[in-house]
Amino acid sequence: MTVPYHAAHGPTLTVAIVDDAELVSGGLRTILSGHPTLRLVTLDSREQVRRRIDLALYDPFRAGHFDRIVIERLLHDPHVARLALYSWETGARQIALGYRAGADSYLSKAWTAPTMVRALERVAAGERLFAGRLPPAADECDWPGRKEGLTYRESEVLELITQGLRNQEIAQSLYLSINSVKSYIRSTYRKIGAERRSQAVIWAVNHGFGCPIGR
Image (cartoon, rainbow, N blue to C red):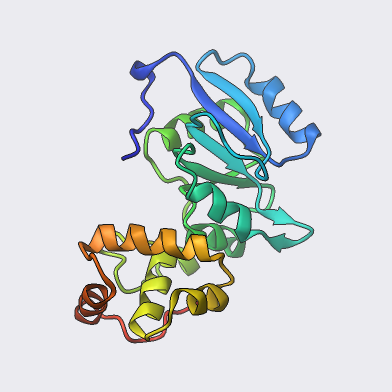
């Protein structure tokens, strides 16, 4: 179980800047260096994480495309307690993409240093922040299992299980790795109290699954 960060737990909050340009990571390190409660490190998403990261910061937009692969990897890394996306792109569509991908928060690179520091501390403590507020496209949408704590992606996976798809078919349908699918299945089963597929299907049918999930 992830233990939320609290200042009383220790003097520092370890924040990892993932795969960002040296200019950006260097700038963040400079403006946040005066805050003794923060320790900034850089993280290469292609390498195995070998230390606890309280909060990972990742800009998911690469050449105009939203990169889900690194997000999936960070969300399921046991060393990464929380993931916040951050970007110059803070329109409703971009934030909705981050929300549906399962990120804990979506922050703006345009924020001042004090605002960013406070946001990092709040996210690490368990809050979910989305540059302003969640846009209607994300805030007002709904999906089966949301009230029971399932994320949008977990709901997608469970929906496909209900339709009879095997793990490999689910991976192909959602453009995920097979390991990511297995990880989502484990987290979903844990939340709904299922131990096998038949139990998960029964739970899903009783909680409104069986209809297409909006994308």
